[in-house]
Picture 1 (cartoon, rainbow, N blue to C red):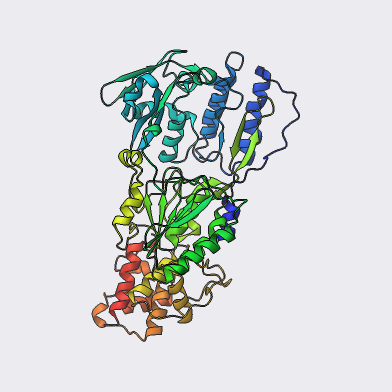
Picture 2: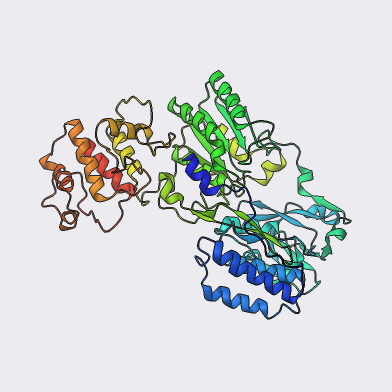
Length: 565
């Protein structure tokens, strides 16, 4: 897995194309060349599925609209035109960057996320007393409406990432003017929940530097020891039961290799008796997902000895770090914190781009990473924000008082945590073997090496799969691989069930039979289906035209276990 996913999602940027050797030209003709280059040579030729979320007609209509104003618009307006065109792709990794050569103006304010709310985090010094107040409106519109009006400018594939993109740019005056929310050079009205209204004038970046500002961060009394550090990765014990690892970027530190870092973690784990390992991905925006593998391997060994793995995620958890978070669930670990900015399945493997005339920069995805087909933990999930199993939002009071809300909660709850159940998610081959193993009492099994060549070595169902292999329950596919993340068919489910019954010497119980086998199951044309029906372990409403759900798999496993009694 580490090699497959690393190749799929690495975000180390590379020049995408050989840019045409145009003389720099920012006239209407130069802009037209850049527009054509971006749309025809970059998006249409190099994106894996440029029309996945918007039709070609939508792209063409907007492109025609942009062409109609190339003579009259400013460089900043052209930048926003290109941002809007690229945002039609609906891909968080594909964008034209805000900034570059544009002469942007800004309002002297910023906002911080607090649960589902925005809090005023920076303002002119004269408005210092308003810091920390909830923002309820922008430009005379309720905040949700204002965000919806600004959304077409920002490339995103889920609401969490979109919200973050808008909030990070919420002080740029040009975006409000471009989207028609504020008149040219007019002030921005910011409504606060306490009834106050801020009226802020736009300023150039140079002018902004001369304005006396107050920051909410200046009110922080102290910082939690788990606050984000200026390091790629670090670790420490939090107490005698909890070991903490902060992983901030999926890029190896030049001064501390991952191999050496993992060796230090291993030494700490050997010296203690930790019941919980916390892997903090809340500040990690990506890089190469395979880098963390030595630490995941250590965590797997600790879990096999009874420790619990908890991953922390938040809106900054993105791209390769997102994949690492799903890997934590694949290991049987629990995710806590807040919804991630990254989507479970997503476009990635990013390459950089620069337009030949205006020199505006951006990036484009080159692959679609379908975690749904790569990991059991991703089964049934698509292009959607990764949700934590346990939601623990950071509170403003805790931030100002130097407390890490999620860490404080975890330390106060040492009990075993559980993943969120997805009973209607598709049942994978790996999960069904795991369900069978657990229902049958988790028989003892010796495990030296993974039983199939496509095993990753960290899966929560690795021991069950080893048992199934050794007992002849799971024999793999024609090429010798198991394909654990593939949805199990009714024929495969019946084969696993009948082989398990044979291995355990279980026989049909007349009380478990449900009459003649349904015609729908007969259509599967598998002898194992008939045998499994006779055993009484297939549901009466089995429908081969529909995927098997996790809940159905659990019921079949329990029905087989009942034959032991």
